[in-house]
Every structure is written in structure tokens, then in C-alpha cells.
Image (cartoon, rainbow, N blue to C red; front, side):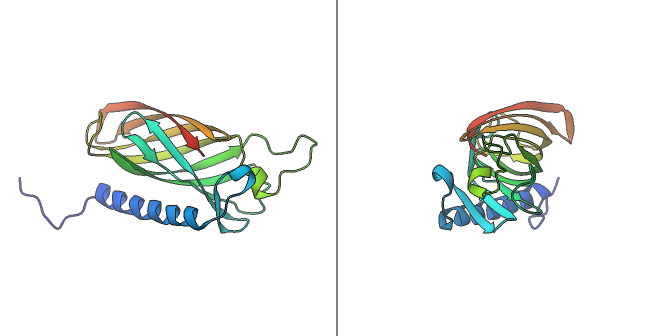
Amino acid sequence: MQTNPNHVSCADRLGGATAAILLAATLVMISGRAHAQNYPVATVAPGHMYVVRGFSIRNGDYLVLEPPVLFFFGPIRPRVTLVARPMLGVGGSGAGIGLAMNLMPSRPGGEPRTPAADYFMGPFVSLEAHIERMYGPTNWRSATYAGPQLSLSLYVLKASLGWMVDPGDGTDHHVQIALGGGF
């Protein structure tokens, strides 16, 4: 079988796009300022778009940097936000998109948690759709996987559980378990 050396697969494009987004997010995080109790939040568009830290140690692609971008459609007060998550790991890369909800929307006195610094302290629960390409050192097959992931972020710790399936081979599926930090 001949392969076209000029052909770029969807997985290659996804990997390149993820690397570019991850680089941009990292630069924004480095240049951003820290908020409440040194919780790193980089403000991209005040009141609407923020980048927060995120990393995981998980089966599949081992150590993964995944700084999510949070999109708000109004003031910080809404409990639900849109999440876009680029991922770059030792054995793979990918992207995720979904919704996150702050589980503690008000201060102990009942006052709304409107400042961004208070809001980002969490805790959060998020449900995301992920697509990931495994390559390099991994215990999974070198393939593209897709599936849902549920995460719980407790201030600075994060736990995730996902179900990843190779769309080209329905028998190739994995439970993805992750422990990490950030959002």
C-alpha cells in the first residue's frame, strides 16, 4: 500500500492544533496575574474568558498538561460555564469541550460570589466530550479515541473518569482514570 507523503491526517491536524492552543494558553498563564490565594487564573477577556491551570496523571498517556479555557456569557455569577480544554501528554494529545458548574455559588453569609477570584476557588464538576490521539509511549493502541469525561475539581485537586472508544474499532475501548491538579 502506498501512502501519500503530503497527506495530513485529521489526527495530525488535531495534534498540531492542540499544541498551538497549549502553547498560547501557557504563554497567557505565564503573563497573567494570580488571584485568590495564589490560584493561577489568567484573564483573557475580563468577565468573559479565563485560562486556569490543569494537569493530570492518567492511564493512557500518563502525564498530561491540560489548561482549560473557561467562557462566560455574562457576569461571573452564573454557575455554569463553557470549557475548552487542550491536552498535551507524554503519550498523546487531544481536546475537550463541555460544561462546568461551580458547586458553591455563594459565600457562607449568602452573599453572591461575583469576583473572579472567589469563583475560581470551586469546587467544580464538569462533563466534557474528549477526542484524543495516542502515540509514543502509551499502554493503549496508537489510535484516535473519543468519549465523555466527568471531572470533579476540589480547589486544587482534580479527579476524572472517562470512557474512551476508538471509533474505527468499537472493540478498542478504555476507562480513563485521572488524578491531578487545577481545574
